[in-house]
Image (cartoon, rainbow, N blue to C red):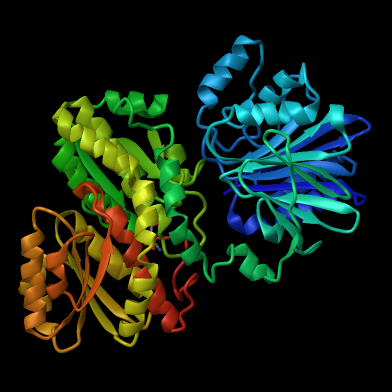
Length: 612
Ligand code: M6R
């Protein structure tokens, strides 16, 4: 999500780093920084905001040199501030690291390091890495200290280190997060992503997990974490810059659909403790939630896809936490004259945190004495700043206009909230609680499995790509899935009209249009209303409509009800909208692609709707 770059060579390092960081700007970020080694020692510059602002700082306070690292940060753990921006330095100011990923055991590591006298300057998990290296460097040379530090880390990382004690080379390593080496003419690079270096070289070494690199201007030396040499020849990248930005995917939307296992992992990180069966929130959110009255009234407000996530939240919160919930489109909420008071909590669900109607909704709520909890993806956004507490979704930057990973991470965050309130209010018996928690913990894996349906979904999309009208139907938790599936399709393929309904509503009007070949996407996963959905399917088939059915794996009986069948892994019903979202998104994507649509930037749509 964030961008890493490193340079060693003959060119002025700051120019090389800024150029590479600029080429990663499309990924989104909120702060940036560089660290350079030169005859003065280690020098660091950081700025909140754009790379051009960092460049302005570097013009005012220049640094020269030929070796350094840079980073653009998209805040996940810790606000977007200069302190939290990378590079992070150790207590002596002689070591600096940049890092992508999550260090899962940073809490205990930090405590241990503080006990040894280390002083921490940021709220990030990253900072433990540089202090760990500092600690080991008291007794070992830098390459060994780096490897020993890496061995202590649990979680994912792409990390680059520079050290005054070993000032002729850069160090890098990866586990789970991407890091590549670029080899140029008497210059070498680290980068988290190929586009950063494509203008300078196409010769790239792709690193494997748990490999360590010592990098000089003449190229990399690879070893294992144990220090055993690794041989790897460079490959030549033949992507153009546009393809490279999309990580090899033809569109950002497809890339982001595939990022969902990682995005959900980030949403759950540090919050779900399946071993202890606990949900843990940051101090501010915990204080907020623990202070709610037993008779608190919840109103979820949101727009578009976020509204659909809110509808799923309503089902979860009412059924499992037994709290009363209303869900409103933010554009309606702000004008409907709702009467709120200090026992009302408005939950604003928003990817961008800037949507004008949602923002106006929370201002109105606060003016009436209500409390505001935001479920938001962008740290430091207007809604995140104005809310009383924020559950960040941590899905990473979403670039395609059509929301995919932001949606599933919103539903996941609402699931966390639901389980927290359910436990607090003792509404779930222990045996059921275990199942719910285990279900939530397995979501990233289940989404990964759901992505395996891609070839089947693509084939089905090809079959229906010429249709111009679609219905989407579902019940209970998957009524919002039907709305979201239809929105996704009409959004990315604007030549198609798609409408989502609660399946039980079909007989009250929409059925009048069903005729031979009319495609209807049904969500018929395992649920207490499964039989009722089957009846709705048969009503469509009786009128010769075509049923594209999304069902749970292992449902042998469904085959005879479906013209086209897509299966998804079984899960607890309250989490099924997350798993079901994957084939719905893929279906919209491939139908749009077959129609030659401008998938990432559909006409008339903007990523962030900041006007009413
Ligand atoms: O940034 P927000 O989540 O507040 O945005 C809300 C909607 O504008 C957004 O979900 C929109 O509907 C998406 N384009 C849907 O894919």
